Length: 256
Ligand code: NAP
Image 1 (cartoon, rainbow, N blue to C red):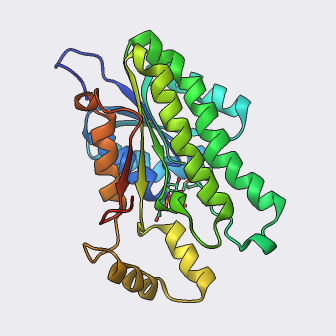
Image 2 (image 1 turned 60 degrees about the vertical axis):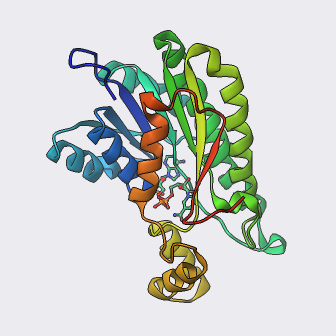
């Protein structure tokens, strides 16, 4: 959020922002006043998110990069700094699932999930931190998950999401002195393409899956991408400067 009418517009990067939680978060941060880099594997995939932001009067740029690729991350962050301004907010949201029970999980399934979630968040945070340190202000928000507490069929994903909590706390310790806070949001069940794919894999309809999950959630509904975007907005804003190294569960009830 800009501090005053004449303050420069701050720039945020949201990874995996072509759809789902990332798209909602990009829209929310644009509404909060940030220029938003909509980063996804392919710049063309981010076009709808950018168009929605521009239609609402915001400023956005689609950027293509695989967050697990060091050279692509460096190039993407350089492009954002040049075209939108130095990024001082980073939301590490890009994610993939390669669910399977341990005995069927391949090493490639393991490596892919670690690469996108952990290596991706590491590379993006490392590339962006210099801009934050120069500005004396920064906000990093990592997307963890309730699966970090353990979830059948997700040895790779649960490990990555728990690892992101360790990264969050460590970067909070390292970067705090530069005005940079680092937090995680850990969503429970959020209705997106990702959970729709899980329903398909389980052989049930998405509607049935949502109803079954909602019955187990204290607020009796599943989450929406907007629920997560609103939580990220708080952690990305100027008003959360004394909150760092925290994991905020956005799950319709207490999880830990
Ligand atoms: P989604 O709908 O599958 O969207 C994920 C986005 O990330 C896609 O646009 C995807 O691009 C992009 N992406 C994948 N690999 C990438 C890479 N290497 N580099 C750049 N972008 C990449 O997922 P979502 O449900 O919105 O989830 C967003 C985040 O929240 C993820 O980190 C997820 O683990 C986490 N989360 C989700 C839930 C939930 O219930 N949905 C719960 C807890 C945590 P492609 O379309 O090209 O693959």
